[in-house]
Length: 120
Image 1 (cartoon, rainbow, N blue to C red):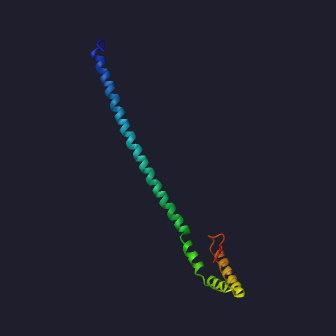
Image 2: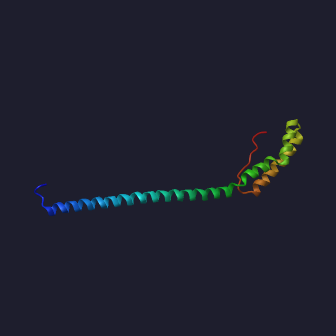
Image 3: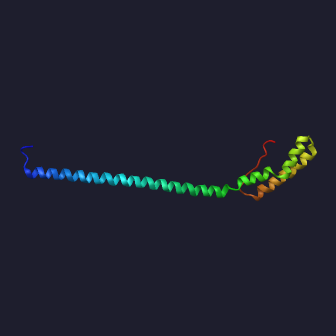
């Protein structure tokens, strides 16, 4: 280091401080930009999820009401009552009425492919 001239020492100090300063500015810019992009991605994901949720709710929001309507339908109740009493003729009559109503319901509401009554 003793052989290096004062001019070269000042030049190396200048280059070192310049590289260090530019590196610090680059690191700060990279960190703030990456945080900004991540935050933007989270916000976009949240907005997309909220829009998708609203679309699904709009398309399928009526399903619980339809199920409750079918559950409380008078023909189904009559069918279940007569079936539990062992009156097969009357149970068959009300089953036919209920199945016709469900069939009409499925033809009217194009959102459903099929409906099943699984058990009592």
